[in-house]
Length: 181
Image (cartoon, rainbow, N blue to C red; front, side, top):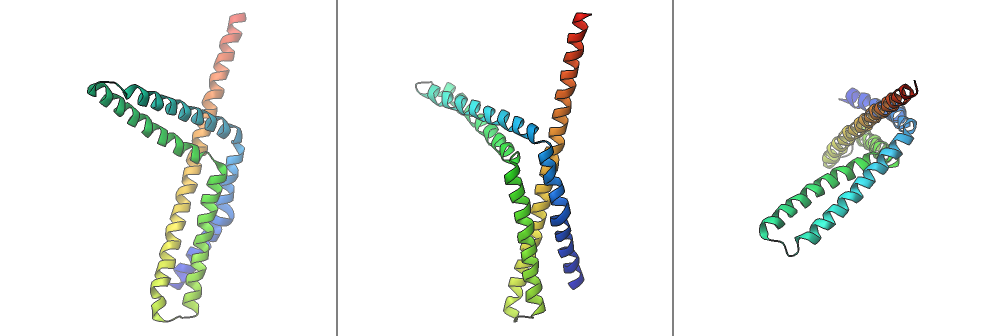
């Protein structure tokens, strides 16, 4: 068991020291794309807010059938807004760095606490504290891997979007050049 915990702590240190910084630095490579897509999503949220407000204003004085349809539309817009808000949060580099490094550092601290409790062989009452520290550390480590995966997926999506936009611009340039021939 001691070897497994030692290996686990080395994996956490390895990800904290190499993988997490490498992936979070990739965010900086696509900073312009992130800002652009974040602004687009914020504009969409504002538009949905306006549509929801208009829907609330239209409900007053409407028949029951029309108002139920408007309420369903407002709920649909609310779900779209929450999805967009989640995507906006994922496009915030500062927030992502805090999520990743905070969970990894806390995971490492909890492994160190577990190690201290085991080395100094505290009384049996600390068994639950040991188990809690180890389980929480493992949960935070898995959460940080999930956050890294989300960042990686965002980077891939932004790369595809940027490639598609560049391809679209190149197509338009070819069309425009063809007009002059």
